[in-house]
Length: 220
Image (tube, rainbow, N blue to C red):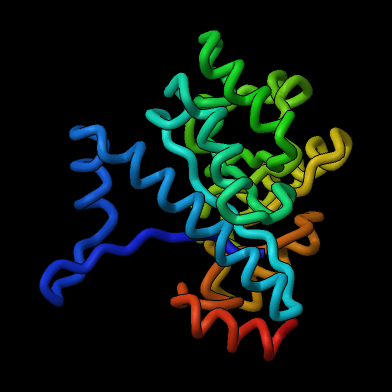
């Protein structure tokens, strides 16, 4: 699997996400950017199927998107325009979005599940995490924030937290992904903690589509 990351270049100058994303959120452009990203990811997923390397692609969903009344139409529009199985497009949402009790958000989450899109809890542990909510959430994947990983293997407190969350999530039938993995030592201790998947520079730095195809050809 891989995750879609947005990059912005203006007149040859690279603009960092922490600069252009807040602007997009303030202006409302984030909704259109989110739709474009989802469709682009779906078309890439379809292309990877055609070349014999089907790969799940995770796409971040913003609060503005999930609170939009037409989110359901966007989901089905993406499927209609890409002809990709919805199971290959994973929607990543922060834990606060999953805990939003508004009718629009509840309906949009239900629409995503109904359409067949897998859901993941992104950056788990950075907000006001409530483990009691995990049993009721429609997500089947939990992504541990890199804040727990960066101090490993020396940080035994982080290790204890990861091991506890991993065991709980596994009992609930959830896949656990550790974000921000950069070293072999981190990989090894995360495996010891029971983490089932890794994401980070240890595996690959962010790649454009053409280089991703080459990477997949080598590692598939």
